Each structure stands twice: as structure tokens, then as C-alpha cells.
Image 1: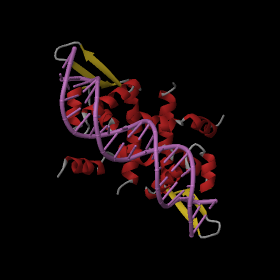
Image 2: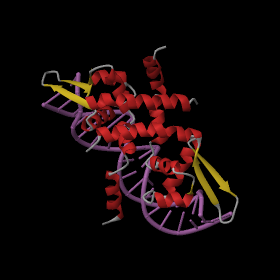
Image 3: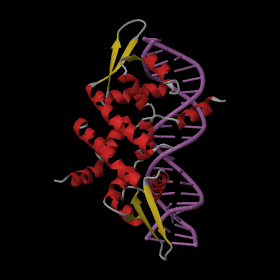
Image 4: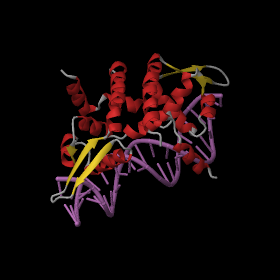
Amino acid sequence: MTRKQTIQLEERHRCPVEMTISVIGGRWKCPIIHHLIDGTKRFNELRKLIPEASQRMLTKHLRELESDGIIHRKVFAEVPPRTEYSLTDKGRSLESVLWVMNDWAEKNLNS
Amino acid sequence: MTRKQTIQLEERHRCPVEMTISVIGGRWKCPIIHHLIDGTKRFNELRKLIPEASQRMLTKHLRELESDGIIHRKVFAEVPPRTEYSLTDKGRSLESVLWVMNDWAEKNLNS
DNA sequence: CAGAATCCGTACAGATACTG
DNA sequence: CAGTATCTGTACGGATTCTG
């Protein structure tokens, strides 16, 4: 077994904290989750709410959040197409975690 | 001003949650903090405790944690040189945050 | 409307060699 | 011992164009 394979193996069982970071750590994942806490949103709504994110990155992060079970993606077979994104129960359970991080930052990073 | 407005306002710059992630989000920062919770460590001790990290990356992340005020770096003017790393108060205050993230992952990412 | 595909520059990360 | 310095590869992110 090569060193690279060993590392990749170890990467699979990172510590839980790092797994949490990998779920919420993307540049646009916090904004996405935050806006979905307010309610279901369509793709272009999210684009307008997070204009700094390119469409490619928004799509990518939405797909990652979906495959991590944080958000639900519902596609309507219509013309023109419509897609609605919403938080899953797992996604909603993240809210308290985010608040803890939020409060820590406000207390300790008053820079 | 409501809590929600606070978040949205800061989001334009970077929301507190993302600031927290930027502090602890590096590949080796969690392992470093974790080992320093157990007590002060020298550079080569950390290398042995986190062998998968290259020396360059370990140094880099230690410096970042230092400049974020999470760890303290004490250099002894000796030959051979000795450097001791320890958590600051701010660093120790992170522990509860990490536990919240840890617990969330264990509950929700049992994959 | 909600994306997929492509191209491209930069930042991040690893390996190796060197040093006070 | 505790780092630098350098070279190199890769992954990330942005901009643009195309499509069912």
C-alpha cells in the first residue's frame, strides 16, 4: 500500500469535527443554509440572495449539501423548469451548531 | 437590530460562522488543537502525533493558529532550539465549540 | 429557468533539500 | 531541533458559453 493510499484511507475516518467542517465548510454553504432556514427557495432566488457566488459554485455547493443530506432538491417537470431547495431535518439540526459558532466568533473575533 | 439582521449585514463581509470556520477549518488545525488540549507540546512532538501532515503544512497551520490568537508559541533561545506550543485562553474557549460540532457529527453522520 | 460544459488562473498542498 | 526555501502538482473558484 502506497503512502498516498494510506493517507486517503485515513481521510475517510477523519475526526467528527472535521467531518462537520467538511459539510458546512464550503464558501457558500453557510449563506445557502442561512437563507433556506427562512424557507424554501428556488435556484434563481438563491442566486439573487447570494449574488457574489458564481452560478457554477452555487450549483456545486447545492449538490454537495444535497448529497450530504442537508438540503432537499425538488425538481418540477415543467416548462420552464422549476427547482425548489429546502432544508432536511438534518439540515435544520445544524442550526444550533451554527449558532454556537456564531456566538463564539462574536465573542472572540471582535476584530 | 434583530439577530437575523445582524447576520445578514455581516454576511456581506463574512458571517461569524464563516469566520469561525476560517479559524479552525485548516486540514491540520483540529488535530493540532486537539493534541494541545492535552497539554503543551514541542514541534517534533506534534509531528509525531500528526505524522500525515507534512512539516511545511504543520508549520503553516501553527503560524495561522498563532496569528489568530488560538495558540501560544514560546521559543527558547537554546542550542538545540526548543519551541513549545500551548493553547491560549481563546484557544481553550474553542473546546466547547468543537464538542458541539463533534456531537452533531456523531449523531448525524453515522455513515 | 436551471443548469452543464469548457477554459483558465490562482491558491493550496506535498516532496525534497538546506540551515542557524 | 525547528524550522526555510524551492519546485511542482492539484484542486478550487471564476468567467463564459451553450442547452433542454
